Picture (tube, rainbow, N blue to C red):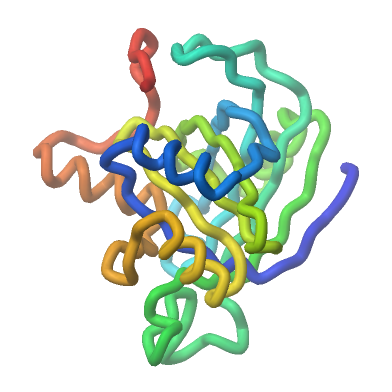
Length: 222
């Protein structure tokens, strides 16, 4: 166990219909790639009665590995993992809760967040299982992280997922709004649902049974 980071996470997602246009925008903004394209394998844990989900909480183990090229060839699993807790911000309970509703807060997803790096990650999975938690949902994505000069403290994360391409903006509400405008988006484009909720909605639209949100082994990404 190497470090912990308590925080309040403020973020939105933006759907990316044209990845080439997004890359042009990032280039014009002189965005710097601060974390190269990385493969993420995420596993959510919960009780048999889904107590965490009912309370708007999340326990997740994420394993990150370097990504190579544009294919879904996944490198060998590494030992370290990121254990994350997310839940409602105590001061925002009641009418606001984890997704704020009044005034400008309605545009953002706001959660309490605590993260800790654990090594080896397999041991943490065993601990959670021993405590009565079990894997309930797995999802994968490739993520590339950028910073925009003149917008300090904001992360621009380009996510390639099995249900499409997204940009995730994380920072203060003011910086999120500014970065979204620079990237050509408006408030009506903001998405606050989790990837799990977006995946379930996609399954309903396509009339297929949900399972885990995983890449097809032979799928090629743009």
